[in-house]
Length: 498
Image 1 (tube, rainbow, N blue to C red):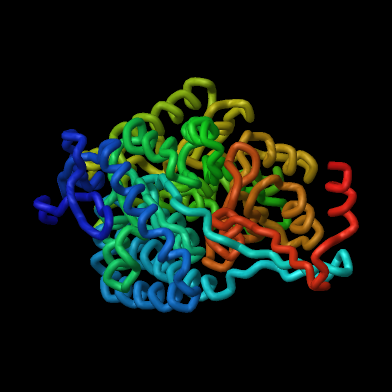
Image 2: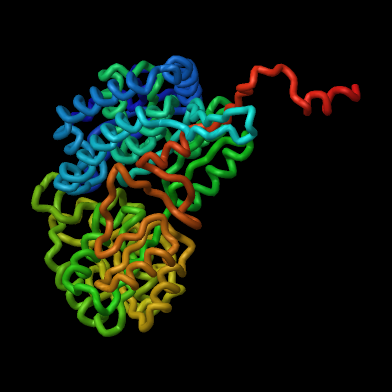
């Protein structure tokens, strides 16, 4: 890929470099190849982007839902024509298999555009009756204003879509800060929106570091709402910084998804689901299956089958269609994953498969082998903390009560799955597991029509679906006197004594 690329800022409809003076290089982590360079955004770039969004807000907020929908449908059509370019770029940015980008990331993002194009025309409040007899009430949903969003590096295009689409469909304008590791498809996404007729300033992209550009965005006085996806540690910092100006905050944070396999489950389906759920995007997914709790009669067979399936997983370059597992995002991330696996091993856990970086032709990329761990303690870091790598821990349980207790025994609550043929068990699991999504006999699929968001330390608020509009709109009660009388008894009560 040509490294002589335009700047990775998109402000008021124009692409440019940042003004911080700090250069950066974007690399394909599966090969170490440089794919783009630029200058990071500084606080002045954030100020200009927010000013552009604020200037564009009044007109965009007054645009009819039908007009917004038509522009978004044109946007989706433009993205369709660029799907292969988007997939190749997305694949190189994260070192992820091209097959994943082609079949999951890009089609899912374009589907999100079409969903929110339709949802824009169904954004309504609930009409209510004449509760007091002489007044009628209605509920209005109104856009908030300028939204400041911060997106992570693991799914750059999808995260841009999840942040931008509900905001602009509801009539807001937005400044998005993607990760400086993976900004290219976010800028491409915004450029396609401009081509579709969405006015300059409605969507702005600033590529900068968290401590500089992120902090400036979160604390900016003209930003009415902050939406952040990332780690729980940073999410707490974002919430604290936004609290100073009482901004609305939406947080989608870390996860540690339990994968509960009861003794009546289809063993083969569960084992394949565990491998797919643990290794998708090299495990760099906040909903990835990370803790497999397996009822004791199936436990040994489950571990054996998962290990055998991991042996079949093909590691390889991002652009090879045969690749199942790509690289991690960076050397720093691989070192973090390796340190957690090594600590588990040192504490007495058994590394059944993987647990190391591959050698040979893959050594120039930041790969890590599919890893299966057993015999870990429930209170160990590898069970309790987010690894964000291709690592699955398998632990046995005896009773259904124990399964639910263990599933809930982390600070997180983003996603989970239960594997069983028993309707009662499935019902109990979906009711009692504390997570924003509980799959039954599957793990990982998401669709535009359904919400995504967490409980507990996994954050609050929803991405995708019509529920996401609750994050991006203000609710206003409008009450109208329908009697035509100018005075009411309480008017006299309040004012006659003065």
